[in-house]
Image (cartoon, rainbow, N blue to C red):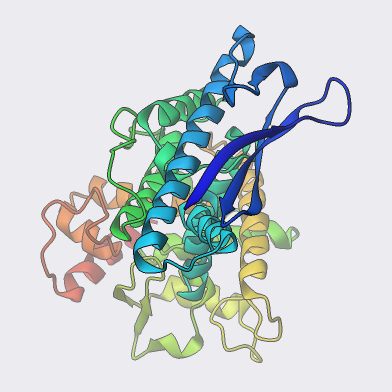
Length: 399
């Protein structure tokens, strides 16, 4: 018969916290399982082997430890019952190893780290970065302390949401973090690591309307007509912004990976890295002008964002995007644009310009490569690419 006891080991230093541990006994063989639950001597009763709630300021902390201990003990007791049924010759060491495995699988931090690693293996680097940023934020909120899926509840999520708002995080950014955490949690439910308890039901996971990020055709004309010949970094940033606008708001990551062979018979074809959707854009003279201006005969890439000779493309892409967005802020000042100018503004601006030209919303959605994720994709139908190219030509003629 195996047994488990909850024990407390005081610190050897006066005034410092001691540690709770578990003592597992089977056939008189004693093993210990360490925890990171730390409490003061006065907060433990040796006779009852229970926590003592004396200090009001420590109540919530001690209550959380008490809940963790209950979960751990239940887990160990279930392990013992399972072993007694499947492996009567099990040892104390088997219990310790089994518990450590169970805790590892139930660890939210470790599970999310595995999800991030899997995203990288799938080539979804941008998504992995957003997951990593979310994990960093949530880890900071938790003061670095991991938690089990069983501890995920609506109260915890409400506390995290409040934590984010108190630090000036916008409602949309908070919602973004919540949606990522929810995706990870639901993945754990799918894998039957935990039962669905809907911990996100009381926090905001929608998308609020944001400050307008589009600029007018008049402003884009002014940017186009700037003489930046003596400021090459601003010149390059301006041209990348215009190229994105010319190509129906192509994202910077897609621009970076364009190759010269992607332009053929007057058509630029590429696959969106975000959605995998194949898009075709009529190759206009304004696009050709930018290509010729920055062409490097030795490179496979269409634009000088990445270099074939440099191995870490992802790092170079992020560095270039940062530099371009920084330069665009200077460009915006020159034409008195108050909107914080970034590469993403080009995409918003194309959509805004298209709508101002009374181009149907379904055409705009198709032209921008919106998939089911897109809020603009309301009347989306399968459209002939010539209709989209005509829409783009109408916009470009306005410049």
